[in-house]
Image (cartoon, rainbow, N blue to C red; front, side):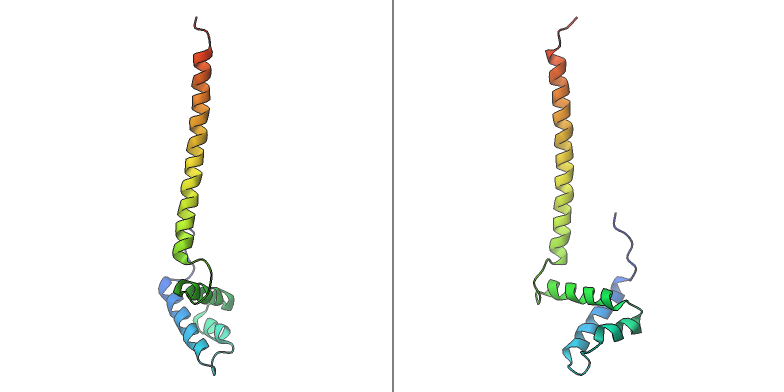
Length: 105
């Protein structure tokens, strides 16, 4: 289960949009993360990470998109469950095979 988010999703979207818009204008580009982060009460590094992820999701920057990362995590979880089930089935089959090999009384 994922940990609860510290910031609401709408604040995250608003901060990302404001920062991207500020970075487009050469006059406000310098210090945009720090300035907007302070105005909204968000750590500038957190804001920078959000903007980078938004750029990746939009295809402006190379990297793993949020949807791909979510799907990958689901597949890895499913893979772990299947490996665990296989281990249980192997143990059970070895146990029952040993029972069949024992002489009966």
